[in-house]
Image (cartoon, rainbow, N blue to C red; front, top):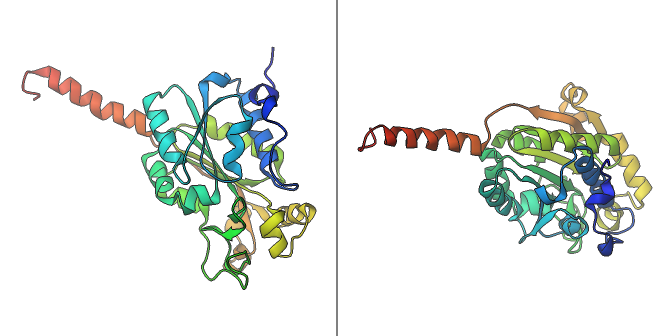
Length: 279
């Protein structure tokens, strides 16, 4: 019997706690549909989360799960994947968890090329704790802690992952639900560190403070601002500032951490077995 996304959900924990208009429910559906289409047994998948709105997602899935401290999800996921490389490890983080509080772990997981998938929900603020600005909040955007506008530019999560060495980097939005599911599937299958950034609405805080007061407003904003990667690269700097690229940004085949580790240490063991002095 074919698996359904419902096979990866925990009915006793539903309905979810996310605000009306939040994109996290769409992302959860895409994630569980991807697992179903890949026919991965729930017992062989570990969903790792930290703290935040999207960090609650592990409550709703029937896979193995690990819920860690704020900003440390990728550190825990690294340990899990290294200890048992046969597991499919997927880390669910918000922009605060991934690249604000968790920024150091993010760049090192990408640098090491740990064979896991990171699904980063980016709603441009700390939604769970009151709408404070994060490291991805766009310049001049208003939040509860920047009522006159943020005075510092935000990280581009995908370009940060690319610079750090990730093997697979992609971005989409909750408006593009089918593309989201397909990118998650491809990310899980691709060896090495894979990132799918999902631009998601937060009408409760970010939208309300930035002239997108309803979920419909924010969905239309996502549709209008998202452009395919190739088109984005052909835009002027001024045009790029007003848009963001969606699609596959990086696809490469650098050996993942565990493969490299085994090659290096396997060679050392072979050398030591050559003679009693390790020469």
